Image (cartoon, rainbow, N blue to C red):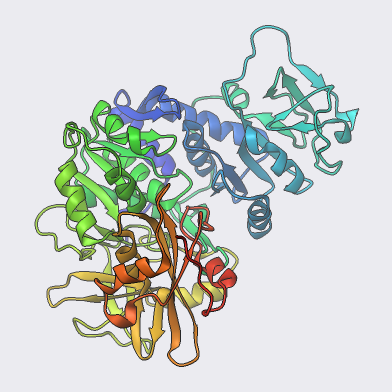
Length: 585
């Protein structure tokens, strides 16, 4: 039997794209200062092929995991597809990942190589294994004209190479943080403050751009890869547990592209604008691969900016954008403008949650419909989605998408009738429309994926009689209070509907009588003043009594995951006793 991804790899996608629409614009990159860089499909395919040959030239091959810690920039995409082209495995991480998170990732995937931003080089030098090496993406393009690079010989001794800030300096000590002697660098060359290639065989630090520039721009054709080959490990956010490495195959990437084309009715003349981090699944599987399959244009901003967002949408003539709740709320906080509804958008691809008033105001003010959806990294596509055309039933997250079956089940695995709340489960094909499994974690894989292809989500929801699905909350976020279920998402949306509350997180804390009490962590708008009693009173007017927070704690900010989600397990761990609450007056 065959499906839409059979026999197709990412290399196949690039070969087809280059032949079919090579001169068409593939990527527009907007850096943090709004500098604009364009690439056609043919130009970018050549960069991908150069990256593939560069990785091979330093000894990376089939099945080798390579960590990518890069900002939203073209090099992130060339590294991602270049590794896939030779059968290596990309392991993308957030640029903000802490050293302890980097070490956790190194140990989890056994990576010997990494492609990193220059500003994170010192962390990797300290943490990476003795063997392997680092490919460094400089803060600015390397300068190779002028005086030749100063080469530090292999016998110089690594202890003589101090790291200062984000640069490796030669011949000066600015700080005491010296790279450890076991870092494994055989030779390092430095041009000014920029890292250049010149490594001896056996590993070291290389300038990514210089290494790629010396390679062929022809497709690698002899890599033994198939559509079943693992292309990526995408680590989950870990809001409630340690992150797990989701195995993404070439077929998963191909399927996500075709699925995204259907979901958004993507056409070759579309321009999809995204500010999502390139290391995350919502960028890669809902923006990047659909654009590649459709022959459309991807407009990638280095970072999200609320005050620049709509100008960028207008100037780039975007027809589709990606949104999350934080973006919608910060956009609504911007001063109204006569240009707010002036754009070419037909849809905003949206990932819940948002309160009803916020959704209505967003669509009214900015004159664009939200295309709601639900899914996860494990489900590859947004498996439940508003149809691309026709009816939408907010607050429904949509209907089962093409290639999926979706049901609501109880804890015994029995499907529930319409209207009853239970667990979302998604049926697909592992390695195609669902993840292949969790890397090196068979127990978690068995717990998440049934033999007949049902994915357990641990998310609560219900369906109506017409097959529309409604998200309630993560099952771990449902507070059991005196026999009633309290959705933390519902309470959080109620809290953030207050004009002085910027962000909120709700958890359950022990209650000796009712099992759990509702506790709200609240971050106020800058300069705002609000008391705990005023917060509770606001909720009383909008929620059933058992859902109203009993305790309020004000915070300056929240602990966050790599994908900037609030890390509730740390709130649980650090939360003071239920009898203790703080007040901002």
